[in-house]
Image 1: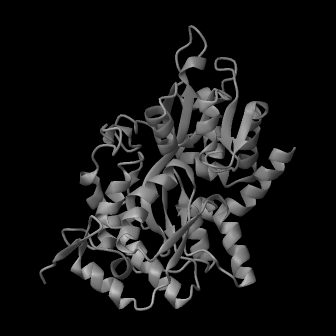
Image 2 (image 1 turned 90 degrees about the horizontal axis):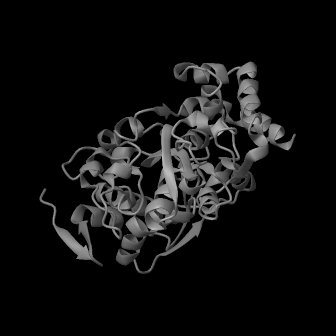
Image 3 (image 1 turned 180 degrees about the horizontal axis):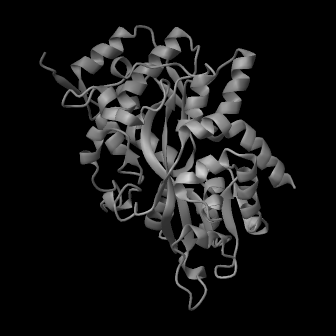
Length: 372
């Protein structure tokens, strides 16, 4: 069938897409989207929320910046029988947990998501990144370190290795680390002599968990713990820390958009996925709106468009060739992606299944250690 296209508010929409929307019947006119705030949420707003609202001027989008607490809050909402969120942005391991607990709805990629422009099915286009029956990936990102270039000690080379984070003698000053065990435990074991391919086997043991905490303990009194992705960029911009972990796109914003004296340290960057889950049990009208928005927001062009605003790699294979220049700065975005060969010389692959299985237990142990 030949697809005709209609231009609505500057966005090309296929006739098939319009028919899809119409088939959903009565749709709610409000969407509550849950994300992470800061530069990442801004990229979502510009890449697909604003174009979608341009097509649907009767829809109101409300943002909630609670993604870091998504699992606990969805558990509580489910317990209370009052789920107020419509679409939730989570990391892959949390998506797996929510799916396993029945708190996220299973999706059919080829029914619920748009095919690629060349007709490739959504399932094939997303490929191995569909790590859960409930998880719709948006981006590949990494957690890595930024540091203040003007705080590198005189006569010392700039930090370039992950274990420089643990070297307080050579690189004195405050660090910021996320207030959770994920990534911190892996980096600690790597810098305590554990081979990369053995990290999760070691971390699965009581002794290995304690080994990681002991290594983190060597810098604990110099750590500012962060919970929001915007925290480390702000601490770096204010000069309150020498180095800190955060998402690579947040560092891109500080370096390229804000022109702060900050540089990236890509060594042992941890690759991860971020994407959407639909809370289980939504009323029919809310679910219809969610599915209509989701089909649009995760299509090939929209995921490529997001890379115009932040340096995260789109999760669709068909989106990658469409990644070009930053929408405002005019710089090529490819070299700023975590997947660029120059940046990916030594990466650490996050183990989704491990953290889905061990997260609650290790979280409890980590929080107890923090309180000591």
